[in-house]
Image (cartoon, rainbow, N blue to C red; front, top):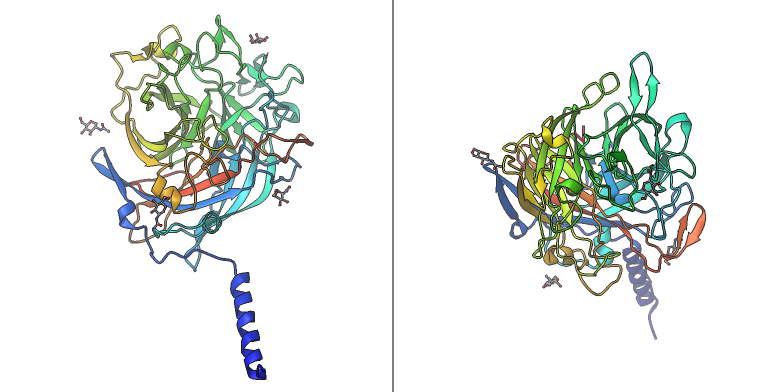
Length: 503
Ligand SMILES: *[C@@H]1O[C@H](CO)[C@@H](O)[C@H](O)[C@H]1NC(C)=O
Ligand SMILES: *[C@@H]1O[C@H](CO)[C@@H](O)[C@H](O)[C@H]1NC(C)=O
Ligand SMILES: *[C@@H]1O[C@H](CO)[C@@H](O)[C@H](O)[C@H]1NC(C)=O
Ligand SMILES: *[C@@H]1O[C@H](CO)[C@@H](O)[C@H](O)[C@H]1NC(C)=O
C-alpha cells in the first residue's frame, strides 16, 4: 500500500516537472562572451577586424500571413534597425525592431502586381556564446521574432507601386516649377501604368523619411514616412539600361549597356552623419563584362550627397570599382548588400545561389566581406560615366583604375558555427538547411564596456516567398517547398565603426 505522504510527494514532483516542461526554454550561455576559439581575425588598413562567431538564429515561418493577407516573404531583401529601438535589457538580452523590405512578391511563375512595402518585426536577442550544439528548436530561442505591421508604398497621384516587369517608360515629369524639380523617366508596368519596383536596398532617415533602391531603374527613391514617393534619383548614364541608346527597364532581357537584368542596386547604406548615401550595383554593367558570370566581377559603388535632398538633388560625389570575389571556375559571387562600417570601409555581402530554395543544397560561398575604398580611384565625373568607355573589357580592369581592397571576412556557412544552432549546409533538404539568398545587413552595438568596438551583425534571407501554403494577392499558391524566412546574428569587432543605423 502506498502511504498518503508518498502520494503527496509524487504529486508534488509531477507538478514540478510540469512547470519545468511548461517553462519556455531559453538557452543561456555559460559564457558572457563568445568562446575565443571561434575568433577569425583579418587585418585591413593596419586594423584588426574579428568575427567572434554566430550568436543568434531565428525565423518567421514560410506560411506566416501579414496584415494585408499576403504571405510574408522576400523580407531579407533589405533590413534596417528602426531608429532608437535597440536596447539592452536588465537580464542581458537585447531587444529592438527590424524594418524588413521584400522585393517584388511571389514571382516564380512571372512578375505580379505586388505593391512595395516594409514590415515592422520586433526581436529579442539572447546571444548564445557556448560551443555546445543546440537543437534546431532550442537555437530558435536565441532570436525571437514577432511580426507587428506592414506599410504599403505609393507613388505619384497616390498610385500603388507594382512588382510587374518594367516594360514601359513614363516620360520625365516636372514636379515643381518653382524649384524646377523633375522626375526622370520612370520604369512602369504598361498594363496599369504604375511605377514598377523590384526593391533591394533600404536606409532609414532620422526624420522618418527613407531611401529605397531597386533593380529596374536601377533607381534610388526617397519615400515619405507614410510610404509615398518624394523624389527619384537616376544613376549615371553608364549604369542606365540602354538598348541602342534608348531606356528599357525590363528585367527579362539584358540591355546593350548599363546594368544587367536583375543586377541592380542591391545595396544601399548611409554614413553616420546621414549626409552621404552609398549604392552598390550587384555585378558589372554590360559594357564592363556584366553579360557573363565569368567577366562580371568589376562592379561599381556610388556615393551621393544627400545633405539637403529636398532642396538640392542628390548628386554623385564619388564612384569606385569593387572587385567582387570569384569561384574556382572564375564565376562572380555577386553582391547582395553593402553596409558602411567607418569612413571608406564597408561590409559587402557576396554569395552564390545555393542553399534552401536555391539551385543546389550545398552552398560554397556566402560571406560578409570587408571593402576599403580609401586607396581606390574615384572615377566619378570621368569618361567612365559614358557607356562607350567601359572600366573593364571582358573582365580585364582598365589599367588606370585602382579598385577597392576586398578582404574575406564573415563566413555564413561555417559548419561548426551553423551546428551550434542545429543548422547545416548541403543535404538533407529540410527546415534546418541554411537558406540560399542572404541579402541584408544591419549593425547594432553590443553595448559591452569591455569591448566598445563590438557589434551585432544582423542578416536575413530572401526566401522568394517559397511556401506550400502561400497567399499572393489574395489567392492561395503552392510553391512545392517550404523555405522559412531565416535570420542570423554574428558578433564582430569592427574598430572605429560609426554606423548610421542606430542613432
Ligand atoms: C593604402 O595605402 C597605404 C599607403 O600605401 C597603405 O599603407 C595601406 O595599407 C593601404 N590600404 C589598403 C586598404 O590597401
Ligand atoms: C503554417 O504551417 C504550420 C505547419 O503546417 C501550421 O501549424 C500553421 O497553422 C500554419 N500557419 C498558417 C498561418 O497557415
Ligand atoms: C557539433 O556538431 C558538429 C557538426 O555536426 C560536430 O562536428 C561537433 O563535434 C559537434 N560538437 C559537439 C560539442 O557536440
Ligand atoms: C523593352 O524591351 C522589351 C523586350 O525586348 C519590349 O517588349 C518592350 O516593349 C521594350 N520597352 C520599351 C519601352 O521599348
